[in-house]
Length: 149
Length: 309
Image (cartoon, rainbow over all chains, first blue to last red; front, side):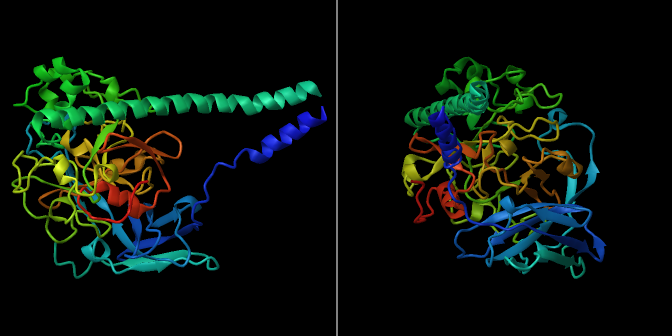
């Protein structure tokens, strides 16, 4: 009976030994506004700046101006990330689904990005998460001086 | 006392049995991918190149080209290359088990659509995909279209992919649409040819619709099963937020002259995806793979120093 217990204990100990030790990542959250109002919906993306090891790219949806990344999808502490935004809205949609669109040049939905390029590919926003700070970030975006519209 | 211990042991055993079932499904998935990559090799033997990724919305994707080499010649011969895939009645309700991952519980169904969806997708490089409406040209150097993470979108990049896409109208750019073994200068053991995606399931979500150019591919721009949303063409923006939280999906902007798309490798296997390399071997790629290595594996000619081994 006694060694059954030891066997059980051994099982408890060795189970879960299989996980490799991933890089420590920390959760972050924050708020995003566009022209002073909370960004209704969109996406935020964090990517390691060139040369960082290991390279990480992570992100989440923005809903009602807020976003949060759990630890599993979080940032590696003391690494600098560039931050990119995206918010697509439908400006014209057709009710038919794509299966019914036999004309190959027809675009079923017209959508546009609300976020100007200076916060997209050309974004200069960066963040660095640290172990001590609360890691709550505020991004105030403005759509002015957008020459593309 | 003894019963209590037996009870505990059984409690330990039962989840393990379920894990064994999933392991079996993953093995079946590996086998399917092996068949497809070998079929691509056989295609190369006959045609002197790998199949194209997609040639417009007409003219089929790699999934159709490979059919004769996975013993589905009867479907291939009945496929009409002059019309869009939707008009091909042979595809209606067609489920190709070799193209289906058994771990995906979606049963190949996409909303009310009659065309079934599958799982395996071809690698179109380490960036995003630029898919112009008209004649192929360089992607505009701005990001109205949601170039969200600073990567170059396809085509004009220094990195070549194993599979390519033409423009929507089917016209082909100056570069060749197909790749040969000789083009894979990174080495076939360091280049990913095939991986899997999850079946979208809803009408607005075309992931897994491998007969369609805009969803027959994946890129290694993001790690497997990433929380960064896939960017699909042809979806209403409002559908962004109704997706399963583990399989985020977003839509491309049409505010330019083409779609900018990016679909990442995803699966329902625990902790990663299966991926077929160009040399015919199949590897399980964990979600935590170093992004640099994963991106290096997506290009055929990058000369990156990383290796999947």
